[in-house]
Structures are given as structure tokens and as C-alpha cells.
Image (tube, rainbow, N blue to C red; front, side):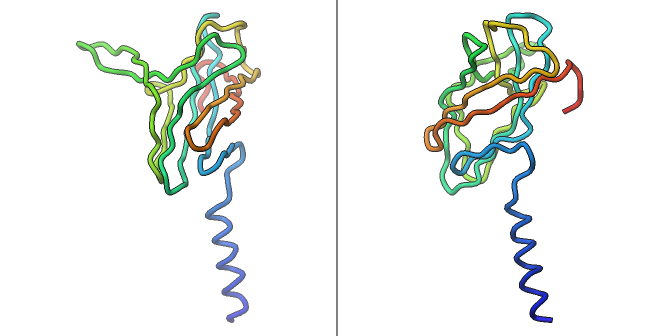
Amino acid sequence: MRRLVLPVLLALAGACTAREPGTIAAGDLEVHGAFAFAPPTASEAAGYFTIVNRGRDPDTLLTATSPIAGAAMLHGQVPDGGMVRMEHISAPAIAAGDSLVLAPGGTHLMLMTLDRLPKAGDTIAVTLTFARAGALNVNLPVRAYGDAP
């Protein structure tokens, strides 16, 4: 009986630390669920993903860049007199054990002044630079607008 317990415990421990397919890691940070919708116009696109900090120290997202965009920044949605407007989010910190979720209808990565119009099936390369973890290259698979994540 004792011989069975240790392998089972080791298998469970490995399952708890395994990364899901498509997860990209740098240091204590993991990025998963990355995607973008095919933009309706040639000037802007939005990217979505979750950044998880599995470390003991906070980290800060300093910049985002993409070779197809003249500019990239995080935007949040802020209520404004019964309407909603986008507002730039500068250098968000991700606390130890916490996550930053970028999702449709909320915080998102805005890619502006596009060199080309990404279509469903394309991939948008993005580099996220963090204060502690350094640079992390993320590919955003482009989906048709409205396709469920």
C-alpha cells in the first residue's frame, strides 16, 4: 500500500504544476488564453489574454509592442455619464499570486496604426516587457469577430 501512495502523490503534484497547452512563461509569469478578433477596420485591433503571477513578488507590465502596430497600450473601460469610454492603463502591477485578465468588454490590449489588416487564421506577434520577468513573446491567434474564446 505504501508503494502506491508516493507515486500517486507525485503524479498529483505534477498535475498541479503542469501548464495548459498554449501557455507561455517567463520567470514567474504565465500568459494564457491569448487571442485577437479580426478587426473591422484597418486601423486598430484588440488583443486578449490572462497574465498569472505564480511568484512571491509582484511584477509590472512596462510595455507592449507589435511589429504590425505603430503603438500598443492597455485600455480599460470606464463608465462616463451613462456611456463607457476607454482609458489608457499605464504600467499595471500584477501582485504575487494574482492575475491580470484582458477580456472582451473589459481591459484589453489595443494595437493601433496597423501596417496590415489581420484576418481570421492569422497570428499577431506581441512582445510584453515586464519589470522582473523581462520580455515575453506572445502570439495572438486571430479569430473571426464574435467567435467564442
